[in-house]
Image 1: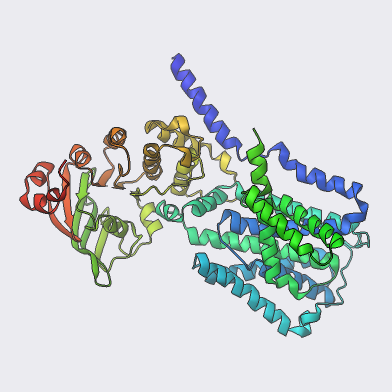
Image 2: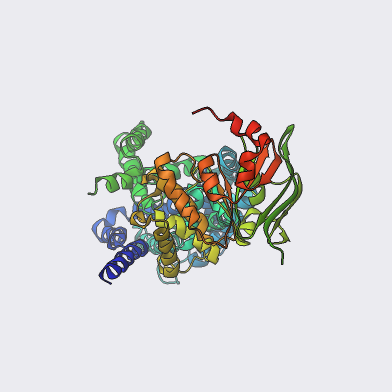
Length: 328
Length: 251
């Protein structure tokens, strides 16, 4: 009897410990506390802060694709840029309502993700990598040619973004922009976190770890990859819309390889496949970029490169990986 | 209702000039303990890949429980009760042992596509997975990442994932491959204790294991069935000695 009770206690303890992994951890409140504190503590940096928050959403969406689904992409900017242009073109043509612009941007970017994913996700590895690049480059050239709508090389000018709910006008200090980006990022994080901790998210990780075995246990791997690719594209589109609306400008760089590549660099600095890599990598990268470029306007990219090398050599798994290893 | 769990009729597969399966007629009875043996390159693993749908047959048909599954995708065959293990471990290496099995049960239960309910709330699935680990004697390492386990125990996880699918037909592709001989007894005893209603097809090189487990043996040579029979008949068959046992290095 006693042995039986002990056995079931062990069993319950193990099952509880396993189930608890998906529960909200107190540390997960930390990014939000810091973001709110920064609003009050650093009033001079809110415009940069808003850019950082919007970029976190972009890199978080890249983490869903790369880190969780294992889809290596060099074209994630395709969806960011699509969202930015949708929100921008709406605002430049008489519809400056930001929330509906944001939703439209997310939906259309999601549609682009779905349609391109339908074709390119049939491949894997290097072929897939090249096709993600092709999708982004094609959209880049399309935006370049469609100058009547996008402003081409000069960028999209003349956006008129209305106040949020007709009440909160975007101000020159970036206060409204910061709060707007923070709230949208929070909602995007809720979606991402829910996905990652759902059976769907765990099955995605399974397919990343061993695709052949996932097929062998009867999983519709291709369909699930398409679903996550579409969701991530929509989140990236929302991120692009945020940056378009808060800066009142959209340039071709929003669709560029550089933006796709920077997202990967930021994600690798923070840590891939850990959900919070974006929350660390993006601020580190963008603050370093801001500092380096003011200290050394000519060679700042060199210093950024050095930072990247340091992370890859000394902190495999990114800064989050480093923290995990240092923890007892 | 047929008495056969699995059947192939005239199954063929070739890659260009290389034929890996040639007119294979194979029958697996319900609750069978059936071994498929043959020298290296005989086409044993290709046969498993054809039956599970990882490879498409060039000709012939495959029947599971009397139904033609030749044109079904791999996932659909799994849903009908066909599971396999791999000759070389195919595990979710960085996930813990328990989650390896949870993933399989979640697919079987059809909840693995769910986005709304957190994974930790599917308690019945986690409990079932844990129970399976207990049966196989690996519950004490349930929360460790699979790649931290000894190889012999990883082979048990390999079997546990397949059992999580509650299969009617289980194809074990060299279950003891790579396991030190001192530990292969654990794997044999696990296989011996599997539920009697699962039809087992064991592909194996290890003759001790085959003769301990199998009640029927099929010998495959160069993609063809050479002979089929009881272990005693196979052991006594001169053709088998010639092509198979005769090739063994003298001890």
